Image 1 (cartoon, rainbow, N blue to C red):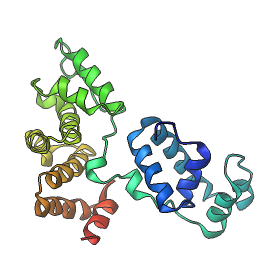
Image 2: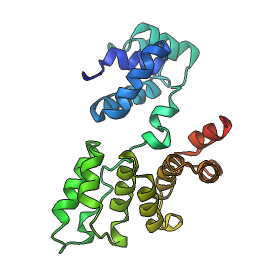
Image 3: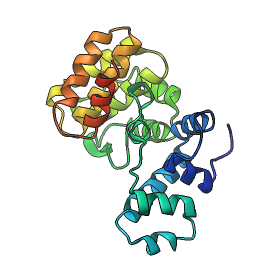
Image 4: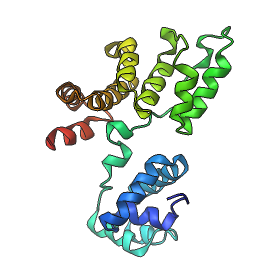
Length: 224
């Protein structure tokens, strides 16, 4: 699927109105398309807000189809898509807006490289991120860049290298939310390296405390 998903389709997708054989390829596209993912998150956010409005206000939204408005207003249906808002570890892309402080090394002539790598990651060009950062020394103050590299390495099939980059991060000492995000990436790398028991241990850790991955980790463990 090359074209962007229409707004109507995104609404149907959020509402769970599509059969699996239709929703599955749409979800796959949304996961890999930054523009469609942003649009879908907007649809989901609007739905969440609409659940707090009277039914008439929901129905008055011109973009919201009647079937979706009725489902939200009468049934109070939640958005049953945690697997999209928190994709499974190997499909997960780190949020990077405002996350990378390139001032950490103001005299480093590689600052342009870091900026380019960050933009490449935003565009989900993992190969370019790896090419730019793989052989470049990164300081402790640039741990977020190292995390982007670890994620990109996983996307390109270099699971063991991804684990090495994550080990260098000293994950337990990272501030939140990067600590949990690094753990989620680590689960993907461990699974890709056929180290499932270790991956489940990390999932248990995430499931044990509140955070953006708690529900997804619990769901992962429940499916075992």
